Image 1: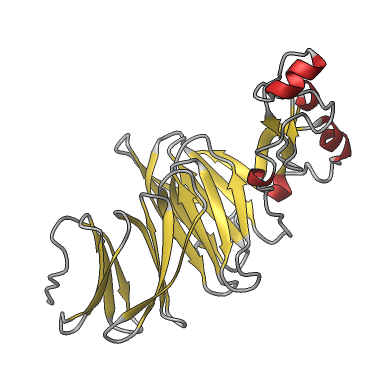
Image 2: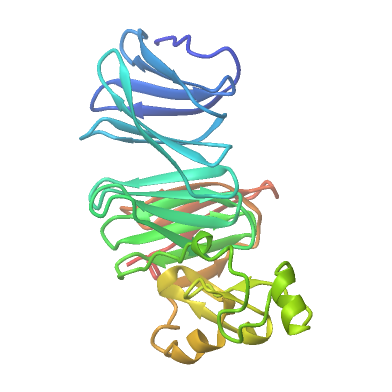
Length: 297
């Protein structure tokens, strides 16, 4: 047996890379380290911005992906005895709780305590981020079936969601480009902070909302409808303006995910892609074995 002295506090995650005979680990001390599995020799380390909560590795490029409690994802390039920071990015409003890497499509999936999953296109269209909304509580685990291009996400809400990733998805609109709108983009009524227009028009300002389809700032009256927008990741109904609601077709509302209730608060998950079996354990101290072949096929 080999011993690895890597951390000053509790180890949070560990990963064995058989092809390179490496052991990767993260700890409560915010340290990432990797060792030679044969000799136990420490090869290098890196300090993350927060305690790591997700760890994935790509053998071909030797990139390691680290998600942490601050919501940041860090990509490092590992060499034999040193590492290089490739990039960092952030898209969640909560901490990262799970990571999953698809080495074929070169896509990274991150789950978060903000109830969302984000698909990061690391390979093809660099910088593209697709948000998936299908849980009512934090994401606990992610698994990917490469042969069918289906993502499995499990959450504290007990939900098991099977996402079809073999469709052309769209990025959600960034609200930041319209956050400073002074009036409703449809009826032109002033928002409550637009004192000048309220005074000029002698009208009380309205509360500002945003259409999830176009991203425009609208008032409640002009965004009274709700709709699912699966290709943008919204499997649940969300606020849209009246114009977008009229334009969304039934085909565009067709779901791209299936939902299954595990009937326990999922904590840990293991997916065996060869058999199509999913193993879940929950806070109820129960372990369940699921045959996923009817839905992952």
